[in-house]
Image 1: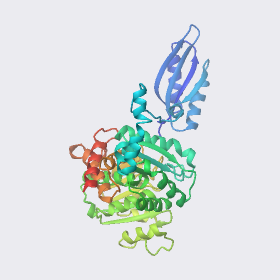
Image 2: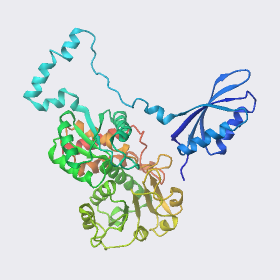
Image 3: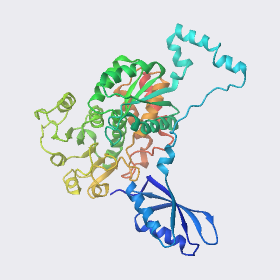
Image 4: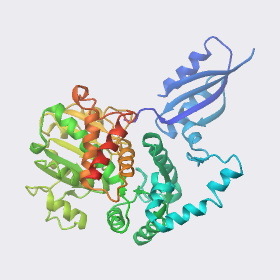
Length: 460
């Protein structure tokens, strides 16, 4: 199912004979092994040879090696160098610090630093709230992780999580002009994480928890919200939930169904799945049936932790038991935040007419989208190479922009729902259809709309 994409983009520099057929031979070799060429540049030309940079997308590191080997096997062709464009973009990290003020002379230095800065320090000491006005706190968010649940990679630790946290900070700046900084903690002890975030909090106007494994993430977020006077937002929970609720609102409009008449199956009851269920319950669907690795969640199952007990108490009205396949029978909506390849077209066929399937496991969804489309009316994934990408980037930049603009001290479900409605409204009206239920992450209208909705909800 994987298709070549920019995540595995390589540039291969080769020497080739200067024949009329050289370009065709090179491109054909890449195509034969399934690579997709995105650029073909002649960088040197000589009487006896040409040097060419071939940039192409692959499906994996192994596939990239296969493409390179196919080129090297051509008569007269020599591979000089292979550059992985994803690694190149990460060299030296993706963030740097810039000064917002000019230091052109002694006067500038005297105001920005000593002695002038002492006056500002004294003002903040007299009125600590002035820190929001006179320091970076006004527009700065900490992106905090312990590296225990990074993307689909699992518990890879803080150092390996840093590229993801850097990327998150870049997205904050790009889409909402929020200054975010990655904080990777070399501990997975709940109490240590909470105390560490509490200690660094004075420098920040918000905390974005990221890639912390369930169930610890629930306790960490809840306790930090009690302790801190700034918003604490776990993006894996609430960012995902916001975008799912937005997308589902528009998907149900496409198929002409009302949420209060829909049976929804949520597969995966970790951080994302639990938050999706909790936010959807505010919109009062007919029923939600939660499914985890041990099957349908119900009150009598006997193996439930405190999170699953709460889920069981508020879902599965008929007390269903069984497997995911059992849960899908007659369901109007499937939302998956779990694992790849859990079911196929035959199971979608058992769902209600005009079913909606959100298969969001990354990089490989719970069902091949092509299979799902055989029977489902609307299909969404977490991938960028299929229509209807459910991506947290639609939510978290605008959410924090709104929180910072409102000088918010907490975050509520009303704010999350306001953000979801704002995203849905950007793509609403005549534009929505089965292949367009959420706007692009590059739609410039999204972050401002979300920010304004959250700001208004925060002020109320």
